[in-house]
Image 1 (cartoon, rainbow over the protein chains, first blue to last red):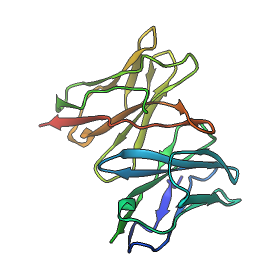
Image 2: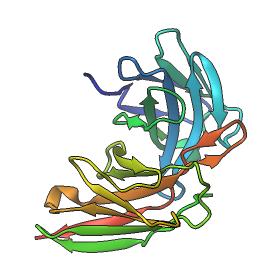
Image 3: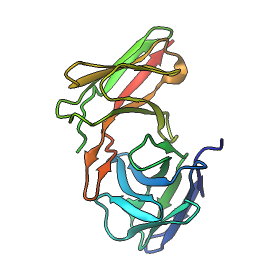
Length: 112
Length: 112
């Protein structure tokens, strides 16, 4: 069974731009969660989607948003990029909300 | 904030058992303990989880104390490839539900 895939793997943007990251969960998994990882703050929870609905949300500004499609694929969007948004963005899928999560390789975003 | 505390770092000799402790003194009766690890620049990898009984799988064993206030992850025969940051997690209640909150984890170095 294929694992969680994330695209793109690497991305360079400039301040003020917006970016969309994509995540394809493991087949059959209906829950997708997003995390931001930085050296200073570690792994921080962004949000979780289940059956196309946002179920949980972390403490991030409204510039960070996401959605989930009927096939469980998910996208997250960051608008008006700031230098501090440079991070590894990780997606994790699980069968259902609250089950063990399986992580993708991440998208490394650099904001210049 | 994470509900767990772990040592910042540990060393282990190759071929020996690695015992990684975790304190979760405020854990509730129905909350599971999860362990993940993250090898440099990769997404976290699920290892094991448990509620009150000891658990074992092909990767590791999880020993949970009777009062459930602490646990130990055991890698029975550590190899160099087990060098990673190990996270012990108890889900916490966020704005909309339970989130996985990652602390700083334990950096395990397996030495030849």
